[in-house]
Amino acid sequence: MAARPRGDDARERRPGVALSRSRGGSIGGAVKGLGAAAACLLAGGVLAGACGSTAVDTAEVLPANASLAVAAADPITISPLPGTEDASPGTQISFLGPSGTTVGHVRVVGSRSGTHAGVLRAYSTGTGESFLPSKPFAEGERVAVSARVLAGPMKGRVARSAFTVADQSPISQKQFPTAAGDPNDVQHYVSAPALTPTSVRLLTRAGPQATPGDLLMAPYQGQGTAGPMIVAQDGSLIWFHPLPAGMAATNLTLQSFGGEPVLEWWQGRILELGFGQGEDVIANSSYRQIATVRAGNGYRADLHVARITPEGTAWIDAYDPVRMNLSSVGGSARGVLNDSLVQEIDIKTGLVMWEWHALGHIPLTDSKNPAPDSSYPWDYVHVNSVEPGTSGDLLVSFRNTWSLDDIDLHSGGFRWRLGGDHSTFSLGPGVKFYWQHDAAFQPGGTISLFDNGSDPPKEKQSRGLLLAVDYTRHEVGLLKQFVNPARTLLASSQGSALSLPDGNWLLGYGGLPDFTEFDESGHVLLDGMLGPGVQNFRVSLANWSGHAPGQPSLVAVAGGVAVSWNGATEVASWRLLAGSSPTAVTEAVTVPKTGFQSVIPLPPGSRYAAVQALDGDGGVIGVSPTIGV
Image 1: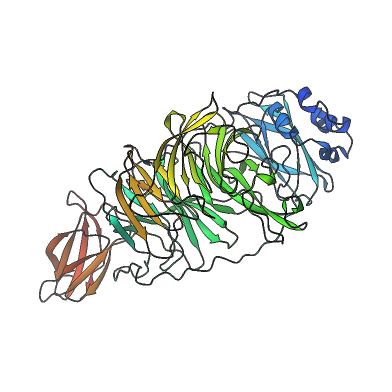
Image 2 (image 1 turned 60 degrees about the horizontal axis):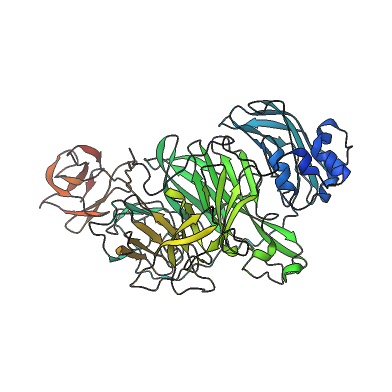
């Protein structure tokens, strides 16, 4: 059985149970100051039919902060969240609440498309349902939603929402050109010719103080085949899953699904625009795919985020290019904004349980990425990490605003913002970060992140940061920083900072792509790199135990045989069987397993051979075919 994840402090969130309310959460307070028609819409007129068939059009008059107040008053969380400005035309309506929640009397009215029929589908978590409209919404229209809670702690309450449908824009599907790399920095094995991943070169080998485990990566670009990859700390290959040409993988991690350890990674196409379109794969300890996580509501899962929860849901991100007038920020009046969004997906049913859009919450002026004066899609915030908190919140990193934002799951509003132009906290010396990735809560309320410091460069070195957050005084101080003292490593993209269970830290430098393990004092314990031109979004560490499918692969080489078994971590040694006929092979020699592929000399006169894979106790766990030599 595979080992439990290490260094990945998964925090449990019971969907709908810990959702907190924002200040002033009453219907009366929410509608105060609105026009009569909008007040009617929010106070119950849609459900009762009192506002008339055009009531939904009054959503235009809602002030910018109304969505937070209205969501706080609702008994359950509705997605698209109230006030969303660019919902998908193919969106479902998600009703997320406490355990046992069911809804009925659902009314969905588009200002152009009219009333929408549909069906309700329950979440496997028992915390709500999604309404699946029978037809798409019209681009640019306003939609009003209402429903009555039929069962659960909020039984009898009425929930309402209003959102706007996006005017979506087609985009170029051109992928990044492949970096030239170096063909000499590719691994090759005669016993596994289909496996050609990038090389792994160690500059500082792991010593006794390094955290035990295997390195999980997903290299792409450069020479070599793209795909998820596990290597030992001595750099030798353990497992590689090659992907077809044109496909890439990112974010291989060890997580838990259904109470069992699993490998999870993203795979798909990486567009030149800077985001991915694909899906997240979950594989068991036998490397068999047991689930796929896809974005809902017409989107494609992006490459940055996939977090599996104990309840069997997954947090993922996606990007949504929408047409928008960007002249107010120096862009084109006929521009395209590439919005960032986050979804929680019920893995078993594929339903969207929760969805949040940056547009409408983060001002355009917060972006550190200048708006283009053309129709080139503007990536104004660029979501790149999502971390569920412990009290109905979600920590999200936005690269292009230089900020970490804590989102209230019920209202969709911010509880606080760290960094950027509107920081809730004052930042102490050394805290300010730029173009960051991989923000995560750590024990004691601290926060870790990978500070790229580039691109364009704002610092001389990329750093791993551990920040102390004082929520009472609204101050943030620098507890630790990790900088490679021997090499200048400035990662213009991607990157990760992983806290290990013994106090060590593992940094992945993304687009360089290098990796370094530090002790808690900042001393280097392990240092390495992949081949030139290769990229690797993040690197993680885990004690992995994999049961390889099939049989060991055996081929004849000069004077012997070469054997390997992709992903078989339990193999401790190989027993060679040799003889003069296929039915007369007997034990010749047993040799320790050495790296991914072992070469075993043949006894003189051998014409046929086979190999048995032995575990640490000498038990046979696999046998190769018998081959002529």
